[in-house]
Length: 64
Image (cartoon, rainbow, N blue to C red; front, side, top):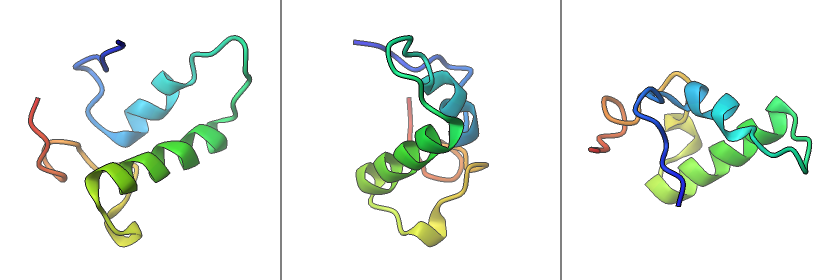
């Protein structure tokens, strides 16, 4: 299981971290859209609440 490093505080920080596959070449836009979809589904957020600058803890109330 891969853990997200503590330095990842925002969705914007997560997108570049997620682009790690050497087998598949993902564009930043592709990763960004997938991250958005996952965040919206998993946190039960509306698109209006989503922004890349959002902090997982401060804005979404997620604790470590």
